Length: 286
Image 1 (spheres, one colour):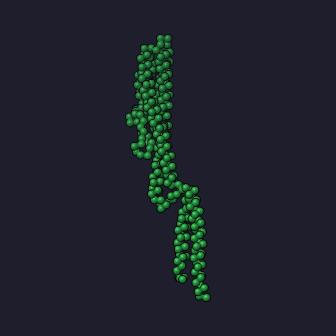
Image 2 (cartoon, rainbow, N blue to C red):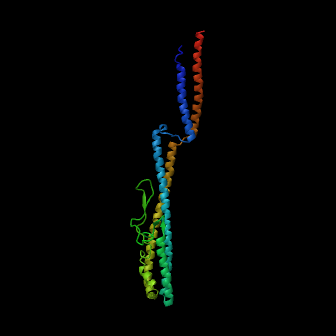
């Protein structure tokens, strides 16, 4: 019987150390709610989970971008809807001026009214913007058309995930080819019944042009809303996949914690027994 090296006690201590490490790891998982708290817990799982988390975050930003883009298209559409209402009124005024029952004084009054309405069309085109981005012309002070390439919205996690709006928009008097009408009503005495009849075609053309731009923005909005719904589904599924890898199963880990706790208590008892066995050697010396 050897007492210089208590092998039984050393074995018990080694097992107890391993059990305490397992117990500490289990407690860490239960307290954090994560199965993977550090790379050593699951190196490959951590790599996959991090990629999924990055993907979900990127898609989340894409959803935000798409929602902002929808707001932009709605602003543009509402502004052009008001311009369309103005053109409807202008057409009504011209029809009134074209009839023989309207006097010269009446036509002058109509000209002044139409002139103000067309000025409001220009005001709307200048003022309509989203976050400082002019939507119906180049800028608040520039009346030229917007970029022919349209507006590009980033609505996904890669550079290729984009949606582009319709091309150039110039929803002002110049862009709607109403310059001749503006000149005619500016000189109030120039308005005649025949001229009013001739200008009706210009207004009809402007309404058609405006409706075309509104249709393009509406199509872009539908595409953005569809992309948003798809990204929301993707994000939900990706987060679920990450949860399977990263999050702890409380039922399973609680059972494991209780198991390690019992083993730890048993190990402590085993060490005490291994140390007490050595005391038997003293009997040989008595």
